[in-house]
Length: 185
Ligand code: FNR
Image (cartoon, protein in one colour):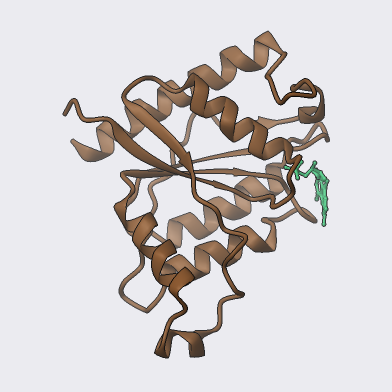
């Protein structure tokens, strides 16, 4: 299949100067021409409340439709207290309902975590993978991507300034393109 694949990218941090947002934008620039990466915002989603699904807010409906339309999903996240930031977990929960209509079901996925710490968000990355198993998002296994020292990777304008990291991210996103192709074959 030669069509360009629509990759919905979810950034686990809501702050403007987020390292993870910069990382997501860098990945979009490094992706092969077969993939189009677009950040899908999650900060506008009210905390998931099952009662709301009797008459879902438009932002829930729009978000679910956007996830359903994507060919694959990519999560770029910091670690909060050794786990996934609440905003990202909330987005997973919103997309997973109403029961039996999960927008995530069967979408090929990948996870990348970044932190100023050397551990590179390992805890968040693994906790997220646990949810993805349940949501039936087949997540790429290799290369694993725990980006440590991530506060040193970008200049003030958000440009990636580390050649080793650029090479690794390129490899990661190219492997993801192959993973998506295999999942769709
Ligand atoms: C953090 N941070 C953090 N870092 C880490 O490596 N492991 C952790 O468990 C935590 N916990 C944590 C909790 C909360 C509430 C905050 C606000 C921060 C630090 C975090 O990695 C750092 O702030 C990053 O810069 C956050 O990512 P963005 O916002 O730059 O993408």
